[in-house]
Length: 143
Image (cartoon, rainbow, N blue to C red; front, side, top):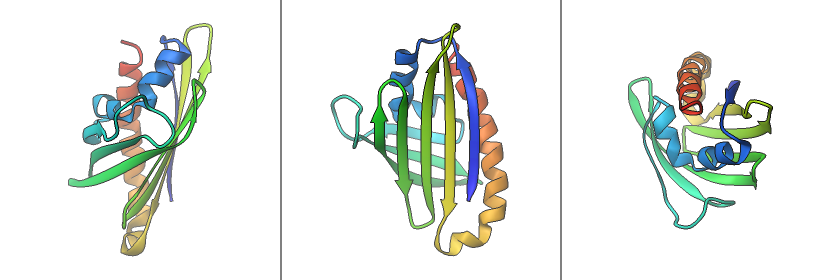
């Protein structure tokens, strides 16, 4: 299993940061590993909301459908995607600070099927992808 955890400080208030991050279609703005992202179902984001992403991983594009599996505004949102090759679980938590909000992003990527053979390489690549996403998130949350 590949794991990546980081905390980014934002000047945004906790509600604004939560609203932005919970709408996972915004991931295409800050994560260079996401080619495109859009929300599937209408209405406000909440438990059960789904997002279709096209992720770029080692030169290949991988379609992922994420579903909000936990929703506790403005403190925590959990998103999960599953394919024949991977299970992705992303937990984002929000802590109000004197300067704004600390956003903690905790991502697990579990390989499945024949792709398990590549797990050690995937873990290394996941760290690099996470670092690039972190830089984009830091930039975006401080605009």
